[in-house]
Amino acid sequence: MSKANETGAPLPEAGTTSQAGPQRSGAATRPRSPRKPGKGRTARTGLSTAAILGFSAALITLVLDQATKLYTLFVFDLPVKEPVEFAPFINLIVVWNRGISYGLFQQNSDLGRWTLIVVSILAAIGLSVWIRRTTAKLLATSLGLIVGGAIGNVIDRLAYGAVFDFIQFHIGSWSWYVFNVADAAIVAGVVGLLYDSFVLEGRRAKK
Image (cartoon, rainbow, N blue to C red):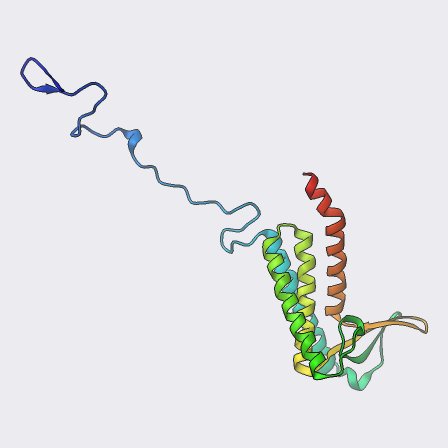
């Protein structure tokens, strides 16, 4: 019940405010500040710094691999000029590889060729998802090298039916596997992946 003043007008009860009175400045709605991107992520792409490094490594590897193959095959015309001594321990020769990296697990049938293509594509997709989710920079970069190399060799299988290898490392009469840029990137990626798994992962767990 409201009390009346001397003039008979009702007085508001204690603890209540008049609806006609001005609103308090503190009650005004404050504008919300824009959300900041998560740790290690960019506002524009939503990708972590590690993911950007990983996908950049994949793209650079793919471009370098295909550029060196196209130049060596169609501009330098290595099939006509081979063997070419590029350095004291490196020759350039032409080898068509129907297996995986460094000539392992040769597949002479169309079924084997398409099996390698499908497996490589699925592996590249799976590793790309891993790159998207990780925040470890070396891990993402290593995965990107593997993805770029795998896609580069898949393009060869689709275009030529086999992977074009042309770099031969040798010491005197001893010769190692013939490989290409994609193969070298895959090996570097595997080394980085192992280092991250056995060394850096333990350090991250201790933090």
